[in-house]
Image (cartoon, rainbow, N blue to C red; front, top):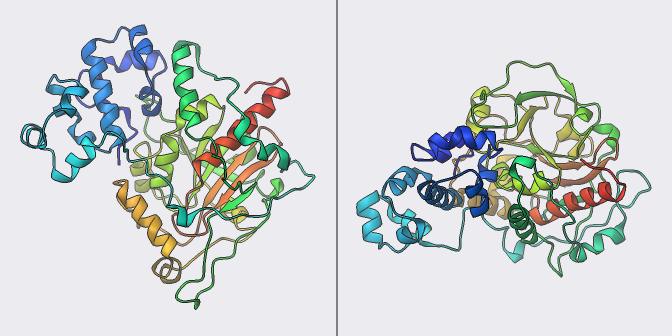
Length: 408
């Protein structure tokens, strides 16, 4: 799986000497750099060689083939010319392996693997409707297909209409399609009896966690948000109250059982979350320093938090930790096995370190005390929250804030 480290992305090619300028102009993380267009490149006086290098490296990054970046760039060829080479030429000139040749030549696919097949489609779950601040109106959800992005936010140094159009198109790709059954505030993938009915499905809470269950959780910041040239890890920092995280802006908290593929897939959409005013946090329930070093910024460039008390994970389980055994939760669970194969197809090295039975999930939390807008529960090992739903809720949060006349 391709790294989100800027140093890894630019390699030893012509973009390396451009790093100070990129940092100055705000192109300081890989997902944002990859959506540069010709207008943005001209604004910072990129040479044709640098433009070609960025195109090649973005293409390779999408396909987890960055190990060939320096060689392909050094050839002096542009991406179209490289794609017209034969497999024999790619193998002999650049040492490209047979399995990688197919991935390189497939211009339609990337390593951002699509959700599971239709056989694993989401099933209807009751809409949680309460009078509390934790819920949205059901009718608002049902009009999701008619809503469009009203505005994009971007730092002045990066401003361009072309950038906005790129982001709008990216978000259009994640619009909830007609016929999709929206699961409401609480969501989880379906489950079914395992081992011919001898093992019952994992029960999950049908109710959104109360805001009181998360606002006072104590967390420790392990890493900052990644920007090129910064220190890799945060020095020992005092715990902070969780509500400080979303005091001024909405926040997405990805509660991770083990650092890996879901975080990478989510962080790859960082420019969309930036435009929607959403902060990204990864929450770990155990602190293994070597694991954090491997995880950040390679798979995740956002802030990483340590929830030592595991209270976010308890909130996902309705007050109890959601746990499953390896045999019953994985070997006897077809969905968990399918999830494993999906992650493996992304080229990620499987992580088996530390405690692996405590399940995670995701929270989307509104600004201030507005409450939990959405939560997803990892019912089966490796379940991922649907990106279309996440982005739809983020859009709803932004639209709500704008309708009140506020800004993030």
